[in-house]
View 1: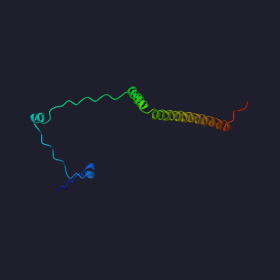
View 2 (view 1 turned 90 degrees about the horizontal axis):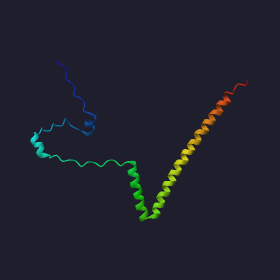
View 3 (view 1 turned 90 degrees about the vertical axis):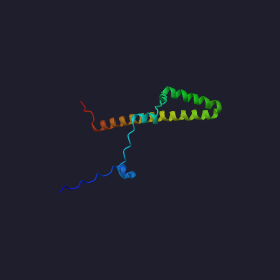
View 4 (view 1 turned 135 degrees about the vertical axis):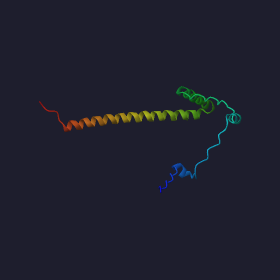
Length: 119
C-alpha cells in the first residue's frame, strides 16, 4: 500500500483571490480562424519621451501664455520659483558651513587630547 500524495497547496494568489481549481485551457484555434478573428492592426508609434530641453521649452511657452493672460499670476509663480531656489541655496550653504564647523571641532578636540610633543 502506497501512501497517498498530498495535494499541493494553492498558490498565494489563488488563496487570496479565491481561485477554486485550475482554469481550463482555451481551445486552440486554427491559423485561418485566428486571421479572420483578429486582423492585424499596426499600433501607432508612441511619441518619444521629451528631453529636458523639450520640457524646458514647453514650460517657457506655458509661462508666456500665463503672462499674457494674467501677469500678476506669472509674477507670483516666478516669485515662488525664485524663493524656492534661494531656500535650496541657503540650505546647501548652511550644510556646508556645518560640515566645516564639525571638521574644525574634531581637529580642536584631537589637538586637546594629543598635544604636540615639545622639543
